[in-house]
Image (cartoon, rainbow, N blue to C red):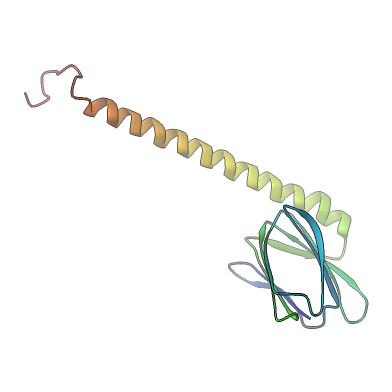
Length: 140
């Protein structure tokens, strides 16, 4: 099988002879072997692992993403960030923790933006109320 892992700026993994692939989505971990049915799923922040033709196990930490299987032999992962490594412990503890921290910061920023947007809409609606008190300079 061919495994390709890409980010918006790079091809991180292009493994033409992957024998087996393991990944994780919201429902849990799963494996892919040659001949797998066409498949599409959203990955969590996790480690994708695979064995190459020589039996060597490889790892790639991904910051969420989409995994697709086509034709039973082409597996593609599109993700925001990916880090390849041979040390699973390092990827799990350091890289995944950093990915999770970045996701938490983004979530907090989105929440803050949404709160500011909501406040602005409320202010506009308050200003547009027909029964609000009129002040000098309102054009009346």
